[in-house]
Amino acid sequence: MDGEAMKILIVGGVAGGASAAARARRLSEDAEIILFERGNDVSFANCGLPYYVGETIPKRQSLLVTTPERLRTRFRIDVRVRSTVTRIDPVAKAVRVRESGSGREYDESYDVLLLAPGAAPLKPPVPGIDSPRVLTLRNLDDVDRIKGLVDAAVAKTGGRVVVVGAGFIGLELAENLVHRKLETTVVELQQQVLPPLDPEMTSPIVEALRSHGVRVLLGDSAAGFAEGAGGVGVTLASGTSLEADLVILGVGVRPESRLASEAGLAVGPRGGIRVSASMQTSDPSIYAVGDAIEVVDFVTGAAAQVPLAGPANRQGRIAADAIFGRASRYRGTQGTAIVGVFDSVAAITGASEKVLRREGRAYRKVYVHPASHAGYYPGAEPMALKLLFCPESGRILGAQAVGGAGVDKRIDVIAVAIQAGMTVYDLEEMELTYAPQFGSAKDPVNMAGFVAAGLLRGDHPQADFEEILAWESPGGPPAGSILLDVRTPEEFAQGHVPGAVNIPVDELRGRLGEIPVDARIFCYCQVGQRGYLATRILLQRGFTAVNLGGGFKTYRLHRP
Ligand SMILES: Cc1cc2nc3c(=O)[nH]c(=O)nc-3n(C[C@H](O)[C@H](O)[C@H](O)COP(=O)(O)OP(=O)(O)OC[C@H]3O[C@@H](n4cnc5c(N)ncnc54)[C@H](O)[C@@H]3O)c2cc1C
Image 1: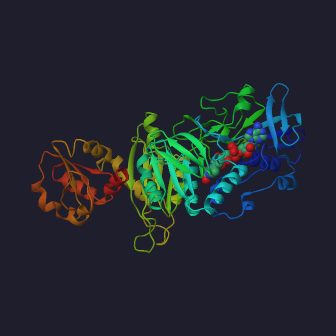
Image 2: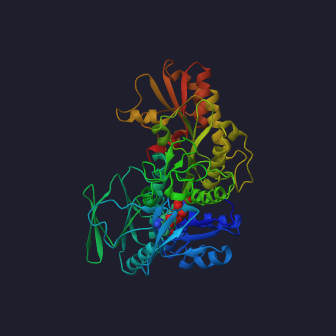
């Protein structure tokens, strides 16, 4: 069907829905486009909400990326706010709409229906969960409620907040609550914060939280809430009791797919609406985008739920293209994400080690610990960069970085490399911007490529620290193995892996006689470079040696 007579209904007016509506109008001046939004606002900045709580974004107005009026005047979209779509009749090709103010109900027919209803915050079924002081954050109404209670807590002395869930939103909230000078506790069920990342990559973030006064309770969960005079008591599964002025839950989201499933559309086991690469559902007249859909993981090919703004916006665009017969196709979701926690930054793209292990995929990994820019130029900040890749082809499977400045740039470069199907050998060759205040002649991305490619070429026999960590419980290396710290005695004295012996790399050639010839030697230095040289010396002298990838700094990620 061409745009002339087409009537498009859109359910949900924020990231995916508003993008689709604007794109549809750019593609057809003639289509009739009606956008239904349950709430009061369209196209608001969900991602800015935590920063409004913290008053980094001082004006509520700034959160309104666009307004219904603007969508009407600029895009001639019939925007109907406070209008909930309650039912889809796919046979009659019509939806039932309920207006929240008047309660009026009516049917609206469509040629094409696009679902962009997003995902709702999860509320675990524990006693007291519906207390007005236990809140979730999704939209402007939520943020108004949270800000009201936060402002009241700030106004008294000793205001306290408990954040349940240490995902991206939970940690952004924690930072912003500290900005408001509130005593903040974060409770997380898992033994790590930021569950999409691998645990060791999150330890600097826990350190950042704690050094800014946030109490971080890992491996615990909220078992119940009890409202008291002017506050709420939180009982944790461990038995710990906390008192707070308010609790904010950030424990994940659930796709809003009820409309779709009731209409008989295919829905995945985790509730995401099933769509094709052109965002078409199992009904050819109905498209779906955003947090409500099931996506294909770009790296593993598995079905996944990945609630992120970038994918939702792109999917909205692709759906509009597809509706008007353009050949746009969604390539899958890489899960590229970033979070700032005080001065620290953590970012991820592609598959984590956890996911690769769970999926039974073969992989290798390297860690590098470069500076954000040339070390001799003031202000360089350290970062840890982890790269996961295929042991046969060298294809990049995922990357994570934690540090400060420059983390975003490196993960973005690697995100592009993953999408282009590149290998670690391509990272070696990448030509990236360099002047001392921006990077290094060997950029961290190149460095990760050098180390990974060296490993695959066999130049660089490497063991992972996990092997050493397994020794720790019985204590020290097993018989026949030696843990060799090749840093200086001063560095060794400042901290070393339990059971290690210290022979600095510069003395190694003269002290080979101290090492049993038949031992398996695990070398390490601070970041991996001296350990690599020591390994090369030992191998050429007939010893059996491997380097512990990423050195003592990587050990410290595992054992902060
Ligand atoms: C606090 C917060 C911070 C975030 N920060 C980031 C970030 O930094 N980076 C990032 O990538 N992502 C972030 N996200 C996630 C990102 O906002 C979402 O992935 C994105 O908004 C999803 O877009 P969507 O269109 O699918 O859903 P939404 O943006 O949630 O929009 C769906 C809309 O549909 C409406 N709706 C639902 N059902 C109906 C119905 N039956 N009838 C009418 N209307 C309906 C809802 O009211 C809602 O307004 C954040 C989310 C939150 C809540």
